[in-house]
Amino acid sequence: MSAQEFDVVVYGATGFTGRLVAEHLLKTYGAEGQVRWAMAGRDLAKLRAVAAEIGAPASVPLIEANARDSASLEALAKRARTIITTVGPYQLYGEPLLAACAKVGTDYVDLCGEPNWMQAMIAKYDAAAKQSGARIVFSCGFDSIPFDCGVWFLQQQARQRFGAPAQRVRGRVRKMKGTFSGGTMASMLATLDAAKRDPSIGAAMLDPFALSPARGADQPKGDSVIEDADIGSWAAPFVMAAINTKNVHRTNALAGYPYGREFTYDEMMMTGGGAAGEKRARGMLSQSRTQNALLNFAPTRALLRQFALPKPGQGPNKEQRETGMFDVLYVGNLADGRALRVGVSGDKDPGYGSTSKMIAEAALCLNDTPRETTPGGIWTPAAAMGDALIARLEQRAGLKFKLEN
Image (cartoon, rainbow, N blue to C red; front, side, top):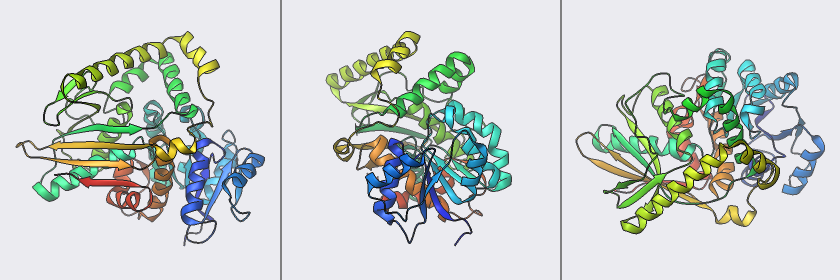
């Protein structure tokens, strides 16, 4: 057993998603025993209230630590093998904790879907993490574990069946039922505001290799309506593709290009076949463009902040989380025309019910991953943990990875 006091600490446990992570740990592993875990946040009184709400006994430690106090964050990091942080937007609140973990050698997982911040943190802290031994793993929720690990799983299957990876992979969201919370929307608005101040951020958002150490082949844009004739469906742009594609390409680079250097990947939403599917796809594209135009209009963003958005810490209720789900199809095509299909699904609301389980299990999987296999540095989920993470997600987080042909 490691010298650290805790296997994992949930930082941000008083927030909406942080509370769900703590609930999963309590339900799955109990208050004591096989996993030593604690809840942390900036307000001890709120931590006590959340502990009472989720039914955590007094034996679950509560730790007060302020995101703006580097000394308290370093002290927190030294007590844990891995820190789970759900405190976003990360570009506003995330750097001090990441810096503390990179400095003292503590592993770190988050839910970040803010590629502008991730790009900046890689440049600033990757060397420090390599030196200290800290494994920093971004995007351990719905963005981007099902997509990053879905492509990894497909390529593993391709090598087993065909002896070579798929050169072209398409991710197609078949079904998704879930809602956004105030924290998710706050992150989106923070990124838009940052792009207004720094035009290079907008360019990075459009670059599929923004998080990769080297560029690859030209990529499909995924920003229009297309017909996937072999799938029998039309497809429209998918809102999370901008972050997921970047993580998939970074995985390929970090793992030594097991997908090949000519690998191409895109993600879209399936809308069905025939004229009806095309109509739905075009309607979704039009709606997306309208929403993007409104979000880029400063008065609209101000009104959303004042009136329309749920506050960070709010999100879908239990019934919505329990009845949510997602199902993603991956189609891999080899250069010689051979193909295979993989399905990845989750049994809860993707952004919260499923995400809270994914990040908790990613943290525990990282604890079990030898440093000889995954040394210090800034990683993606699949590059850091690969097959072990997929197995754990199937066993403990309600995900399924299935070969379909």
